[in-house]
Structure formats: C-alpha cells, structure tokens
Image (tube, rainbow, N blue to C red; front, side, top):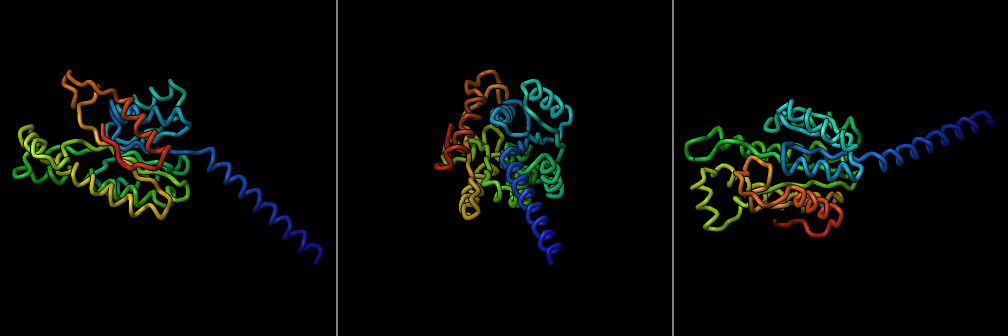
Length: 252
C-alpha cells in the first residue's frame, strides 16, 4: 500500500510539473499567422507583432518573397518561418494552420490576403470566385482550423479590409470605373463576415477586429507613387485593437 501511495504521489508531482511547463510554454510562445504576406501592411504587421515577442508564420504563394521576409525579420531579431500556401484552397489553408501550429499555439491570425481578377464581375467568373475564395472561404477555414488554439490563448482574428467595400454611391462608381468589381464585392462580404465572427467567437474569448484602409498605402501594389499612408500606421492600429480589445473596427 505504501508503494502505491508513493507511486500515486510521484504521478501527481509529474502531472503538476507538466501542467506548469505547459503554462510557461503558453506564456512564452505566441504565434501570429500573417496570411497574404507581401510588402506594405502585412510586412509592417509582422514586424510590429514580432517586436512584441510573437513568432511569425509568413504565408503566401511566392516562395522567394517569403524567404526575403523571413530574412528581413531575422535581421531585426524576430523569429519568422515561411509557410507557402494557396489561400484560395481549403485543404491548403488547413495545412497551413497545422504547419504554423508547429511554432507554438496560434494566438493571432492576421488576414491580409486578397484575390485577383473579377474586375468585371459580369465577364470574369473565375476571377470573382478567386476573390471570394480568398477573402471569405479562406478566412473562414483558417479561423475554424485555428479556433481551439485561439480559444485557449484568448487570441484574436485581425482582418485587413479596403474602402471599395463601403456602400457609398461614389465608391460603387469607382469600383466599376477602376475595374475593381470583384475586389469591391469581396471587401463588402468580408466586412459582413468579420461582423459575424465578432458575435460567433465572443463566447470563446476570441477578439475579432478589422482595419478598413480607405486610401493607398506606401509600398503596396496599389501605390502608384501618390500614396501618403504609412504601413506602420496601419500596423499600429492593429496592435491597438488587439491590446484594447474593445472597439472591433477602425477606419484609416
């Protein structure tokens, strides 16, 4: 009987040690998925959160761009890993989440990905589908796959959105005139999805936030030399949303 008691005590001590070790790991390890990595907003977000102690999973299809991003962050003392993935494909998105999870529990998803094509939604069915597959289906699948981690970490889903999605007559006209119907539709649908996720994930303690960018950002594909908004300003807005966890939406 004495041996059994000692054995039980030993098991209990080991379990306590494992629990403490797990708690320490949860505190020390924070992983952010930056989905749709490229120059501009996502690069600034990766750096902002990386400086706060996050390990960064950079996600895009372009392997060379990812490698350059990892190297740039490493030069600033930030641990980052490249995770190549096509964010329009649900299986690829789930695989990306599993790969990112190897870095540690997922605390934040930053969805900066957007599709191409669908400029004339009446003539480009494939392009319109690509826009929606990335903005809506990809984001939804990523959140579902990472939800257990996000719940355990009291994490966050942060989405970049664009002003083309605003229901304003002049904006709608610009969406047509600038051949951006697909992007406009995707942005509007993403805004609604974010609003739904705010309600759906609140009981899990998961914060959901959106920064809607209403002007061109320096260094992005939309910068034609006239952009005035710094990507760092947007990254700071995301960090402020994440830290405060009160307001869910901000417009820049």
